[in-house]
Amino acid sequence: MLLNEMSDVLRVSGLRYVRDDRAILDGIDWSVRAGEHWVVLGPNGCGKTSLINCLTGYEMATAGSIQVGEAQFGFADWREVRKHVGLVTSTLVSYLEPYEPVLDAVVSGREAILNLVGERDAALEVEARGLLERMGCGHLVGSRWGVLSQGERQKILICRAFMAEFEVLILDEPCAGLDPVAREHFLGWLGEMAEREGAPSLVIVTHHVEEILPCFSKVLLLKEGKVLAMGGKSEVLRDEWLGEAYGARVEVGVDEIAGRYGLRILEVLR
Ligand SMILES: Nc1ncnc2c1ncn2[C@@H]1O[C@H](COP(=O)(O)OP(=O)(O)OP(=O)(O)O)[C@@H](O)[C@H]1O
Image 1: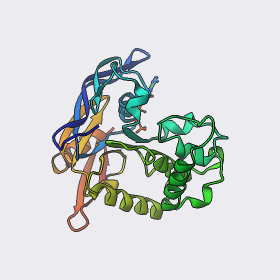
Image 2 (image 1 turned 90 degrees about the vertical axis):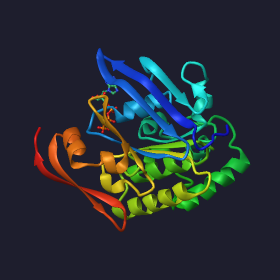
Image 3 (image 1 turned 45 degrees about the vertical axis):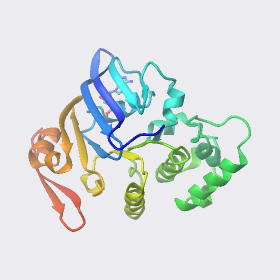
C-alpha cells in the first residue's frame, strides 16, 4: 500500500466504545497523517488502551468509523489490516501462550498472528534472530515466552512488531518494565528509526512526558473517554491542559537543548 505524505494512515470518526453500559470512549475524532508521529496521553482509565485495541481490531467499537491505511473497519479483514500496523502492547502479553518459543513469537509477527502453528520459515527465522540481536536479546532466542521478565517481553514484542512492514507503529507504554538505561537505549533507537527515510508513522501511548522524543510533534490528550486536547506538542503540553487532565496543578518544563519534557506536580487537586 503506497501512501503519500498527505494521506491518513489512521482515521477515526465518532468512535464510541461501550462496555457494561459505560461509554469507555465517546466521540473520538482523530487522524494521523503519513509521516506524523503522535503521543497519546491521559490519566489511568481514560481509554488509551481501549482506543489502541479498537484501532487494531482487538476490541469491537460500538459506533463510529475506523480507517487504517485504505482499509475501513467493517469492510476489510482485520487479519490483513493488522499486517499494516506494527503493535507493541501489553494486550498481546496475555494472548501469547506461555510455552510459545521466543523465536516463534517474533516470526509470527510477519503475518500478525498469535502463536505460530507449524514449521518456522527459515528466512524469517534468520530475520528474527537478527532483530533479537539488534535489540540485545540474542541470549533469549531459545527461551519460552512464559519465563521472560516484563522488560524482556517488551523487547520481544518490539522485535515482533518489526517483522511486519507497516505504515504505522503503535507502541502502548513501550517503556513499561524497562530499566532506566534500557529505556534510554530503546528511546534512542526509536528516535533514530523515526528519522529514517520512509519511516512509519509512530503512535506512542505513555504516562511519562520525559519519554516524548523531539520527533513526536503531535499530542492527543484524553480524559474520561473523550478528547480533551489535540494538536501540536507545544500547544497541548501546557500546564493548563495537563493539569486539567490529571486533576492537579502542574508545571511542564522543556529542556531546550535536548528537546525533552518534564512534569512537576505542584498540588494534587482530586
Ligand atoms: N472489556 C472491558 N469491559 C469493561 N470495562 C473495560 C473493558 N476494557 C476497558 N474497560 C474499562 O475502561 C476504562 C479504560 O480502560 P483502558 O485500559 O483503555 O484505560 P487506559 O487509559 O489505557 O488506562 P491505563 O493508563 O491505566 O493503562 C477502564 O476503567 C477499564 O476498567
